[in-house]
Length: 363
Image (cartoon, rainbow, N blue to C red; front, side, top):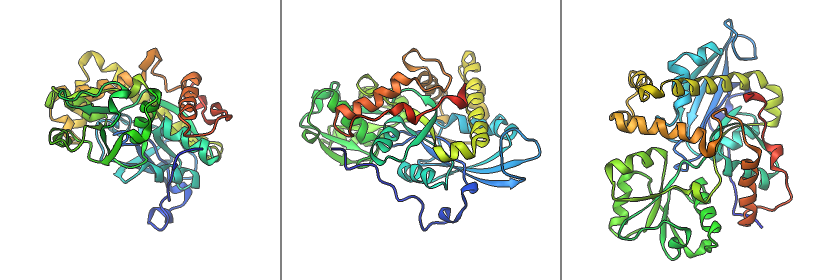
């Protein structure tokens, strides 16, 4: 029983592999094209002894590695820098791009990275299969950041609609394809009844649908905002109606025990930046947008409407389903992530997923 599975060869043989465990601190997540919102944080001692969080005499130098190009979806990391939260917590963060969530998870387990953010599905799937648990220390997004696009000439809106179709996915076996598989399973649609093709996830990929080369494809969080503006005729389905998912900050149990202060400092920053965003709602997030524009030139920052949509989408995800935007993992929701994987025969049952999260750093 089980999938082909979670794989990851870490950073073996690379420059990152040569850094010590104290050289890493990592944040953000989760998995995308698979998610348009995932990353890795790598930390190294700056001037001072180990330990973290809030000391004015010690600075922990950290590099945040995103698994896709940095964008407005990383609002906590962007505001942590711009609004001075990292500095107040004794963290100096350098944001860089890298590849793949599998390597992020593997690095956390190996001890070469302290914290990452990835999808709840991918986290639970890994823990259920590998038996070397990652620990979810804070749930920021409470829904999938993905969308499934199709044409109004051949609209695909229910799981059964995809039977016999060709689906574009950003990678084989990644979070995007797993989420799609779970949606099919929720409607009892055989997974092998849908052909897969690796594609991009930009708005421009819609041309492949118009040319008849694919029937649908996966898009990320930013693209779900761009589509109604740039291709309003397209059909975009939110898989959250069928699939329990989220984006959580992760570490290993050993590092939670040994580096608790540093992890607490990072989660303090995440909480503070979420407050910044919520406090700017009445201004339609324009204070935040203008501040970020002074440092970055992301495509989604060019138009106010798009930038506001990307931020508003994150705010919606923080409290999706009526939850509070407090980073706490809801036990029942976390259990649902595991149960859907068991029901779809991706993993075996009989395990207790509640052992794989803690709310201690966000209460």
